[in-house]
Image 1 (cartoon, helix red, strand yellow):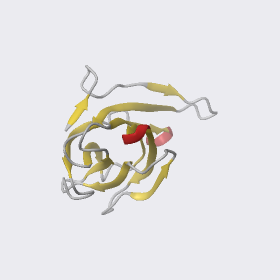
Image 2 (cartoon, rainbow, N blue to C red):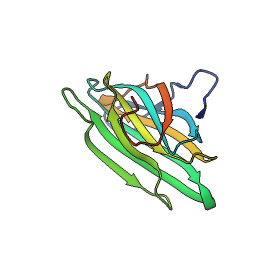
Image 3 (spheres, rainbow, N blue to C red):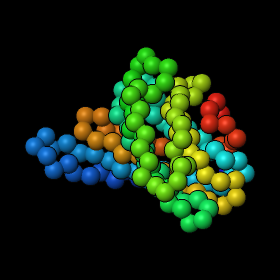
Length: 154
């Protein structure tokens, strides 16, 4: 499994001004490049807790064999008490399936995003976006692993 991270250790505190009458701010963070790791699915364990009461948008932008563009995102809430992320919405804009294919809570209640890449050489960037009253500036990656399953790695 490979992940290429920025020199600051993954997290970047980019603040984006929200030009609405509410004057709130938001954040968009590049969590890193995730790709080829010997198995088809990469499980990215984040610092987003099941009890965090936040709205999250994760976006994947990458590629696969035959020069196909993979671009999709999932928007969901983390609310307590829930056994799974609340009201997820997964949308695909790319040419093929892949990218974000699942999301679940780890055994210690952290949000895990599952990416479908290739065991050989493909991959892409995973971004996190939040804003308004549910802003999360401290989102980070706790760990990642490559498996042949879309669930249960953490």
